Length: 201
Image: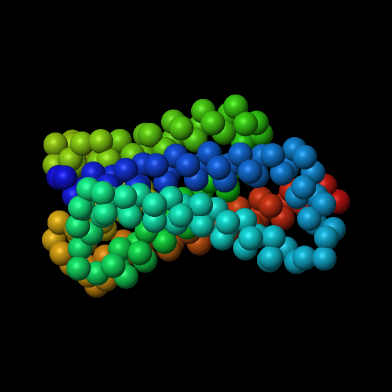
């Protein structure tokens, strides 16, 4: 339980920070016309799209790195025998959340709404996924929903690494699910971004 506190906080705060940061960034750039100016700049659409997705992912990776180092060197948290598996899981989780956050930014039209929606969505996903209490005491329906959410998938993967001392093979299904989330929402974000660019031409 003690060793699960840092991964639980990693999942919850990654959701919260990326939803707010990525969403607000896109909203500000839509409102200020930055995206429109980028559309006529000497960069391709692929570069614009990749820059947003990589930037959002890096926000999560940096935050996860900070929390991981604090957990390890201040509180002595054990993250399992495979640091590479832990990093890969964290990276794909950050990417999936970044893709969702960027999509939210394209759909939502104001900072006030993205703050309200981002906080509500992040905290709801964290609670359902087991960041606030053990999944063992949750009703079966909540465990089922958690297994379908990127937050629940990531936390389950961290549990495999930390509590059971397993490696990459054990979390391969988790990695695949997070990759699917990343691809699906990245495609949705790309389509919304392309539609926004076309509407402004």
